[in-house]
Length: 319
Image (cartoon, rainbow, N blue to C red):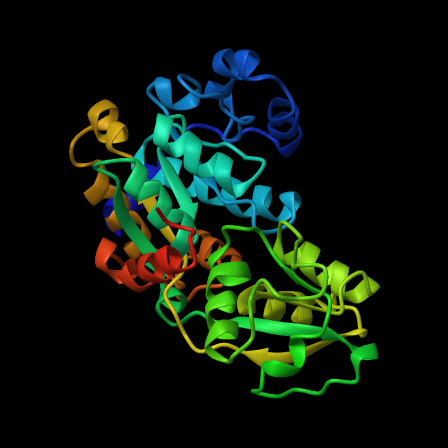
């Protein structure tokens, strides 16, 4: 940890939030010239963008509200930049598919993927390497929620969900679609057989909003978002937690092969050391861990997501 502290003390000045927000709203062409002074950049286009320079471009699947993601990944970009002596740029993306595509083309170097999108990105990008995941990601869960008007109370039986108007999150979300669909299937519920077909809200926060409004009678989201929003008092009283899934592996950082070519062959090891070295005893590290809802980060490997790949193939989401 002492080496990381030394790097931090010599890090460049971090730009103001207003500067960051201004650059995030500009076109990529402007960002290419200006992002050397910032830790956030707009969505990159295929075949170039932030990763084409000497910077490390990080991204994430858009599973929560954009403001939440900007604060989370802007903070980790600043922390990583200071600790590793790199110019780290957070690049927001519009949807899960864009995160996978931009990783494949090399416009994003390091991406915070869910289990399914991580498998998809790794299969499409030879040489991609899982770096680290949170301590909670080896034992992750989803929660099914219902609108109170359904009259349903918490239960382990998923069959009463079958006749309800139901929404998943993103179509390629691990915790908002893949694993819930699998567990519904195991319970004897057709995961595509909801009245009118299932909806796809696009994010866990959107799922909560749609169920609260009654647009859908039931839905599913990852447990971490549910817990966080509940602790914030942000869950509408009309939303009732109905059931919790068994555990599975989920989120992780995935590093693309081109990053090491530009930034040094030891980059993967440096990044793993950075994440696994984050300590709750250090105020700066603690902020990163708290935003991620983690006690620590731990190493991970491709084999940790074999079950995700198997289920993805069985449901036609991995080819």
